[in-house]
Image (cartoon, rainbow over all chains, first blue to last red; front, side):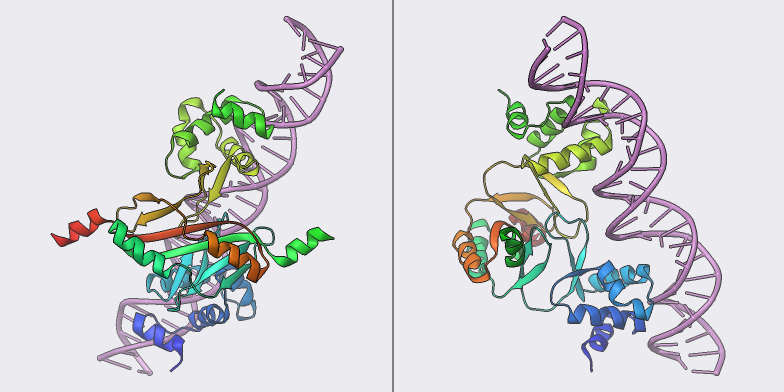
Length: 140
Length: 140
DNA sequence: TATGCAAATGCAAATTATTTGCAAATATTA
DNA sequence: TAATATTTGCAAATAATTTGCATTTGCATA
């Protein structure tokens, strides 16, 4: 069974063409994307933008997707809730997002839990910089 | 000299009543706040909301303040750019924010810069958990 | 201390991101 | 296949933020 079908089954959401389209776009994206980007990706399917928003909302509600905001941007971004824990590198100029492999914080978070007595649930690390391409633009 | 006056002098921004008001609100806030909150705080001064936004923009431009978004919220929040680099521990239940002393990422960020060829500017770490007090509530 | 001018502000209107009401369409279940 | 609760499309509403433009103000300098 496809992972979309599984997700619908577990969550109790109906298996519609629109949900499948949005799911597929999220699945093939390797960085978080916003509603507008998903909508544009699906122009040929002529899904309504408000439907995209509603689908994303339902996905977040059911833990199928994760909603977040990054940096100074005020646009919500979404990604499939894959188990793997990931962080991102954001370019301050072109706003491109790159995933970083590995998490430098595992041990730290464990220690922190002991010293603060917080029950740590999750963490988010955002690193901002200038990507090599934008640096090159300056060099010229 | 007040730190507002200093900030205006260093940045070259004019020292206006409105800027001083916004600065003071930011200065006395110990967590980041949004434009609407600042506006409401200043109702008695009757500053226009768009002026608040413009002032915040100019502060961010001049590194007097820092703009960010947190979690799933799509509203920008602002805080004075106090030099100290800090991370925060956020309680998922009572939403209290606690500052963490020390940064576990200094070496990591330096290494990352070498491997990715990004010119790293800054980073933000958000740790979410349940604070001891909220845990205790459950225990009962 | 007055004056000129760029910068800053207020106000209203525009834009962008997101949400909502409602009627029509569709998936699921019996 | 019919019944029904869910989902979608569309248009309009709302929330957050930005912009154009006329007016005001801070500050340099005469």
